[in-house]
Image (cartoon, rainbow, N blue to C red):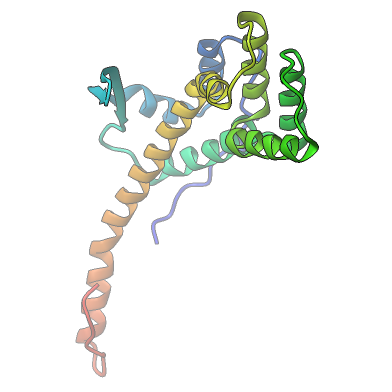
Length: 213
């Protein structure tokens, strides 16, 4: 097994959802270990045209890690990713989500519905927004209150939530790719050693011939 040098104890990654998206992402990135920041900076971005049934839908960006990502980079990326997924992008608690949605919808009264229908509507909102962090849902509700005059649909609020946390999700995706690249490099380095050990065992007196690793 490849040894990975112990990582230093990190400080919590800084995050303030009230800041503009670009500044939030910069703060998160600046809080990462320097070797990991260097890998993120050296990554390659490929832009491709996106098309839907309605035609051209803009450009999609795909980020790939640079060459030379190591198991140590992978360990740092996994640790940072766990913190981002567990704190920054953690799904909102159900009571926070439903409270925010009910407050938002109260600003745009609709026709009276039965309690059973209201429960079903609440379940739909909880199901369709449950993947987003509380701060993104708060942001979407605030934007809608200040810019719209009609009752929102779930799809419209989902779009605002996706836009709110797009930068953080993109950073998490890049860290995941770094981790995968470093772990793949570790496996590639380990395979020749495993083959040598297997061959040595096979040559020993009484060694059992088996499938090569």
